[in-house]
Image (cartoon, rainbow, N blue to C red; front, side, top):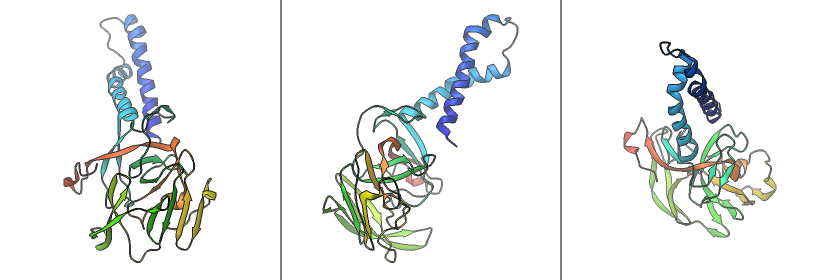
Length: 262
């Protein structure tokens, strides 16, 4: 379900009823007669729906993390806020950018519409920018020929799987973040079906190397061996960007995670 479209249609209907009530119906209605129920509800809810629509479309939008691909940064069940304007102002529903602002940076945690099915929202970390040469071989990441620095940390304990995983502090530009790996897992999740710009990537048994095309981004999950990302299904076009994740506001299973993500 496209919630943005549903909200826009609801706003349009209640707004139309509100206008008709203000300029037509109330002038014709006898003072002693009450508003019809559908007019009363529309007039009451229109301002609320308008505020929600504007906040969600241009300022912040809430999301819930459905999978473990961003562990240890984001856990299943985290409710996060996404900044909708930091990468430019876009028209609601159409998602067409009308005002250029900032561009995604390496290390940003970005929400976007999944290229293979735009009805789905994905969240991953930006690794490669337009024009970058991204290589991921033997569980090591290189950007434009330089290996991304990483420092070993104490193992990560997964409460869901009751296992420990090697954990590292990785640096991408000015961003430092944790990643986890699996000792027994292959070097990368595996190549998916050919995508539109798959010719920009070279695959072999050790991993892959991709040149990010103009207007696109290469993204990966922090749970490197359990993430379906650009290594599998390709690049994220700028037109699919939703916004930048920046804040955890709730996790019903771990209340202490409030505000633990920047």
